[in-house]
Length: 255
Ligand code: FPP
Image (cartoon, rainbow, N blue to C red; front, side):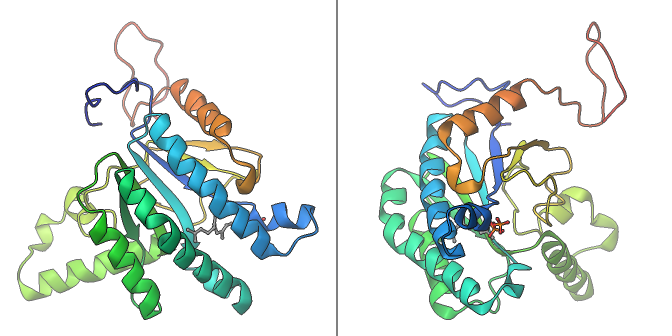
């Protein structure tokens, strides 16, 4: 965990440095209102905008959001196209404001096979905001954790075959450097909305020791209050990373 920034209100012991969110429930939110699914995704983008602002207010340094999984291609063509359109709109409309607010945008996931206009927008968002430091926004797009691990393994195998890496030098740390998330701290907290309680191939390597908070609200209804509530739940957790608590504190099974 990096030290708190000067003038920063966050409590470094209890505020997660990195929060990752599975923004689930857009479809059900729309269905409950008799609206098409795309209306749920549009409302989801609005919730995302508010959440980015809230992350800064709440002292979170890194925010990763699961915007489109490598499995989402199996949705009806029209929904896939709606989601692609919303990503483009989000970047086109919000990039200037994100940049002005000091947000650095990074995108994880497989870029190969993405439409050229989307790929170039993602590149533009990353390069324009590369020097920003107020908040790191990581967008998981065409992302799947298993796919990420397979791509990393392939790159490692290629480096070994080239002779630029010894197989005996491949440690967990070296491996992590080949993932899309190289240089990004592991999430301290993963939030999933909509009442579902699973990880759905989201950051399986990186979330090995993350705290998980499941909220019943659908993603479009997620507010700063829900965010603050998740942070309160996180603050009450006891993280041991497989170790034990210091002497004088009740000890339990390492987990
Ligand atoms: C899950 O809801 C949500 C998604 C698959 C996409 C998340 C996308 C957004 C919040 C909007 C797009 C944002 C960007 C930046 C592209 P679901 O459709 O699985 O909902 P359901 O489980 O209720 O059907």
